[in-house]
Length: 531
Ligand SMILES: *Cc1c(COP(=O)(O)O)cnc(C)c1O
Image 1 (cartoon, rainbow, N blue to C red):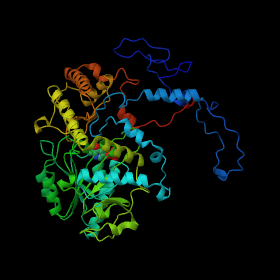
Image 2 (image 1 turned 60 degrees about the vertical axis):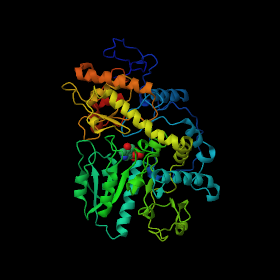
Image 3 (image 1 turned 60 degrees about the horizontal axis):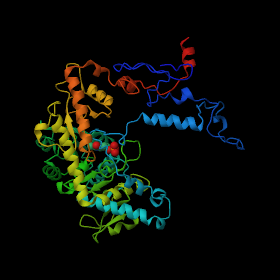
Image 4 (image 1 turned 90 degrees about the vertical axis):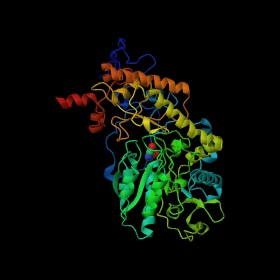
C-alpha cells in the first residue's frame, strides 16, 4: 500500500470492526510504521563525524566509488522508528505465550540483575586466569548442580544451544564408538515425534537416521525399537518428556536394551522443566542429555538472544566430552577438566588420558546464562525446583482438561500429560484447520500455540502454558481458545481471514517463505522498470 503525500500509509478500514480509515494509518496508540527506507533519507544522519584524515585506502580497486545509499534518520526519528516497531511485537512481558516445545516463561528479574553485575557481565574470555576465578567458580558450581539434578557423571558446559548440545552429545558417542573400534555403527534411531533438531543433528554428524514409530497412546513403540537394535545401531535419541507432552515410561527398559545391544542413549532434555527435582535421567540409563538453560533454568528465550545447552554425560561418555568440561574426580568433587589437569580425572573407566573429541566453542560458553541459571537454582532451592516441575505439569493438565470437551485431545485417554497439552483439528468445520484457530488467537491478544507439530498428530496444536502462569491467566487463555475453537467448529467465515486487529491481516506465509522479498526497491525504480 502506497504512502500518501505526507509520507504516511493510510489505514484501510478493518473488516468486521466498522472503524473508519485514519490519515496516518495509526489506530489510536497502535502506531503504524513504514520501513526505514521509506521514511529515511541519505541526506539525514543522527551523528556528525568529522571528515577523517584517512591516508589512502588499502582496498585498491575494491574501494566503493558510489555512496552506499543507506537511509538515515535523526536521533529522535531513529528512536521512534525502532520503538514503534518494538511495540508491534508480542512478548512474554505482555502476555501468555502458549508455544509448545519451547518453554516461553517468565524469568525472575533477580537473575537478570545478577547476570548484569559488572564482575560477571564484563568478564572477558582472554583475561588472565587468576582474574576470573569467581566466574570459573560460578561455572563449576552450576556444573555441580546440573550433575546433581540429573544424576549424571560429568557435564560439558560450553554448547551454546539445545541443538549445539545435541551435536556435542552425538560427537561424544561417535568418539566412544571409534575408541571401541565400532565406528561402523552408523544408524541413529529417532522416534517419529522427535523435535526436528534430533534427526538433523544425527545426520549432520554423519549418521543415518531411522524412524521409530509411536504407539497409539503417543509414546515410543518400545517393541519396534527393541526389534531394530543390532550391531549397526550407534544410538537412540529420545525426548523425555516427549513432544506429545507424555512421559516415556519405558525409558529405563529402552536404555537397558540399547546398552545390551552396544549402543548409547541420547536423551533430548529440552523439556527438563517438567521433571526437574522429580526424575534423574541418570537413573534411567541416559548416556548424554542436553539441558536448555534457556528453557528450564531462566534466561529470556526466543528473543534471538543466546541460548545455552550444557550436556550432562554418563561415566562411559564423560572422558570423550569437549574441553573444557566438568566432572567428578577421584576426590569426590567436581572439577573443571582442562588438558593440563586431566590426570585428576581418573576412575575405573578412565586412567586420566583424555579422549576428548575436541572443542565445541573457543571458550567456556555463555557466562551470562550460567549466572542466571545458578541464581535461579539457588533462589528456588530443592523444594522450589520440584515445584517448578509440579506446576508445569499441573498447568498443562488444567489446560488439557478444560478444553478436551471443545477440542479433540488425541492422547487425553493416555493419562495425565506432562508440561504440554496437545490438541488436533479434528472436529472443526469442513475447510477449517489449525491455522484458522491460531490466527483467531492473535485477535484475542495471544501469540498462537505451536502448530502442526509434532507430525504424528494431524493438525496438531501444542500448548505449553509453563509453570509461571497464574490460574487467572490460564483461565483467560482457555476462554479465548475455547471461543475461537467454537467459532471454527461452527464454520464462522470471519475466522478464515483472521487476524483482523493485527497490524497486518492474514499473510500468504507459504509465498513469503518460498519467494521472500529481501530487498527494498525504491518505488520510482519499480515504476521505471515497468515502463
Ligand atoms: C527447544 C528444543 C530443542 C532445540 O533447542 P535450541 O536451543 O532451540 O537449539 C531441541 N529439542 C526440543 C524437544 C526442544 O524443545
